[in-house]
Image (cartoon, helix red, strand yellow):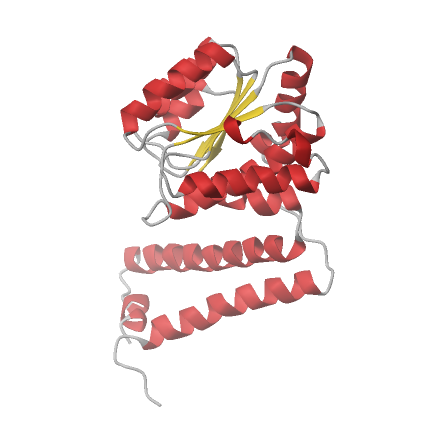
Length: 259
């Protein structure tokens, strides 16, 4: 077998990246502990729900306004994964959780996620399906409906995790006005500054995708994150070497990458 010209370097780089992932998974399978840095926003989840318990007010959760069939799908699934953890804690502490959804296809997934979380905590009878609410598939109609819910229910904790666009600042501002402790997160980098300015804690970019592994402490998932970080470090090292060699007048690396 021969590789097409211009693909040799890419092939071996792919082999190295896969090797990093396999090594990390093997390390996790062998029981060697894998740890990742602290993420303040995730550590504050129990604090936020405890605050709701003390104040006798509900928790609001929005898994983003994106769907599951477009480029923002990973953010939606990440938001649902975090919601499962939040719902288990609300079930444990007997705090109502209100989930608002924009996309029709996300609605049944949100229902099942919360229901399953309550069952896992042995609180199936406390699950309230009417608290999982589909508001509107229109972006700003959803935002307007959520404004009303926030004003009426006055949640003590507001979680917004997933894909958000122009409505991000408006939603976070309403949460701030009702006095909610806000934990937000998105990989839409254009919206991160608005969340940082209006929230107590914000998950930025890849922190959102690492949240499920961080909260579950599943070693295989943590191993996958370690493998990805090793691969990124290798790519970053190649970029640095390329910049230095090019600055020194050598095109060796660029020629190697074209092989």
